[in-house]
Structure formats: C-alpha cells, structure tokens
Picture (cartoon, rainbow, N blue to C red):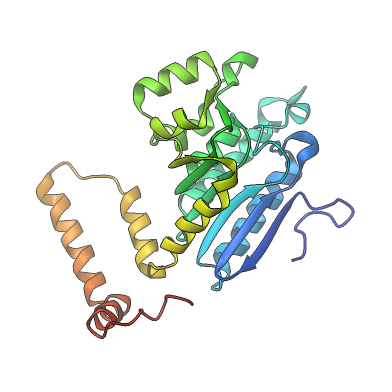
Length: 263
C-alpha cells in the first residue's frame, strides 16, 4: 500500500487487507500514537481507501506499542492559534468512522486518552484488554472535550459522562464496558479471539443490509411513534424485497449460506 504521507517520512498508519478485513494500524509508538498532523492525514486516507475497496467487509482499527492513542499531539498544539490547531481536523476523522457504511471495530491492547477515546467511541464495536485504561484528561490541561463529545456522549451513561468529563479521572476497561464506551473487556491473551468473534459475526451480514442498519441506527427519531413506524415499515419492506433480502430468503429456504458469506 502506498503511503499517503510524504515518501521521506515513515508511514505512521498502515492498511492491510486480508479475508475481507481491512486492518488499519496506528504505528507511531514513539509519541504514544498521538494524533499528529501526519497520523491524522494518513488515518483519514486509509479509512477512505478501506471504504472504497469492495474486498473490505469489516474494518479493524488497532495499534502498535503500549498505547492505543494518547489524544492530540500537544507538541504541535503549543503556540498555535485557534485556526491552526490540529483538533480542527479531527471531526472529519470521527465522522468518517461514525458514518462508514462498513462496520468498524476498535481493538485496544493499551490505554486511550482524550481524542483517542473519541476514536474508540466512533467505532461500532470496541474491545479492550482488561488492563487498558481510559481518561478524558482535557480539563486537567485546561481544555474542553468538545469535539470528541459528539461521538462519546451517545455511548455513555449521562451520570458517568458528567463524572468522567469533569474529573478527568482514569478508569479501567471493565468500567468502560459498564458505562457503554466499549462492548467487551477481556484478558489480553483473549483479545484477538474476541475480535475474531465479532469480525466473523459481522461478515455474516449482507453488505447492503449492514450499511442500511448503520444508517437506521444513526437516524433522528420523529416526534410520534406512528411516524417512526411508517418510516421503518417502508425501510424494512424495501430490504425484504431487495436483492440481498431475496437472496437471504432463498438461502434460508434452501438451507445454504447466502452469497455474501465467505465473500
């Protein structure tokens, strides 16, 4: 894969595609995978490449080194004015993950802080090793967790959000699962098996149906239940009558896997 970065600089984010899975790896351990300008640029480019590749059914976001992502690169933030802050580029990354038509799974074998937690929250599914830790550390350096709140707040229990955003305290993976930030906290030696379990389950879904389900989950609910049912009835009937739906129904009747399984 050609690096989207300047050829003179080693690539900080890698994309590998195998067996229907696009694995995007943050590989800047020297600065704890902080969201530097180069890492942001490469991450966005590789997300775009994975989403455009029909061979990719599921995206896994992972990392090298001890830390998943330490948040913004504060060395680059020092001395810059509001318009020159790297955080201005983060919404495009979080939105690309959140609105991706393909499922995105986060794999953490180490800590996430601040903007790194925003990345985790943007993913559809997140699995962490039990000894991974998390913190919204922004207030402790005099800033506000504003941008990441867009992806984090829909995941977190409200009481937990107030506590953890305001105190900046560190919490473990088990609590992260309990408050909705991640799906599962497992022993580190079981991390890859848990990721494989989720990926295998996701690959059983039809690509179009997965994209449609993600869009449905993001929708704004109308004012009345009747209007909501009307919209969802139309959506459901369209998928039942669609190409994937009809193939799935035939496969069920014929006791065989549908065409997208194993593709």
